[in-house]
Length: 233
Image 1 (tube, rainbow, N blue to C red):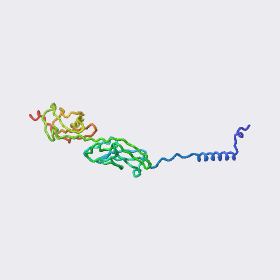
Image 2 (tube, helix red, strand yellow):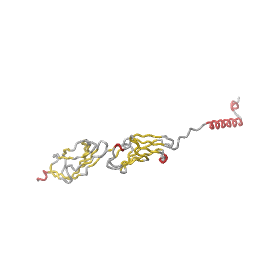
Image 3 (cartoon, rainbow, N blue to C red):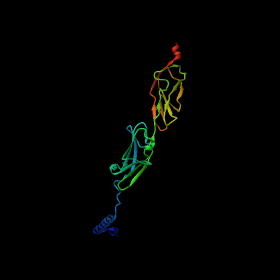
Image 4 (cartoon, rainbow, N blue to C red):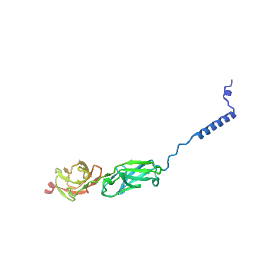
């Protein structure tokens, strides 16, 4: 018995079957109604930047009070700025536009902490933020040894190193002492004793950091050590 003959389908039946499947597919495609398109002129999200002295910050929004700064809003997708309204608020409306200028020494009450962006159909995005105003620390002229000083002693002599920095917001600061090639994290100390210095030229420097991460660096100080035992020979 030839089982193969039982599974043969005439060619014209195959054509009819394919035509029916194609028609069914086209019919289903016609019934597939597309989703309602989203408005083209609506921002999906907004990023706020603080710009000062050419530096851009979108993380901490930190500025220094003695220098003018600017807050800028960047909408996504880009290119919609001209079709949107921007309002900068702090209790009440402080300004409009894509950017807000902050003059030097502006009071915190005059710095916005909310941005509202609206489109022509009254859709809006509200962004709450906080600008950190921080004065960086600054070293005074009170440090020792001074530039070009000569210290007398041996490698067992403990020499005093001291410095002083000031900060209007922080009473306690964090210091790193750099002595020749060594680095010492000395915390809030402003004076240390150090021995083991061989005769010759040495350098020291101090870096200070406040609680907001702002820093200042003491200018590189070069000093000399003369061995008193060698000097007596």
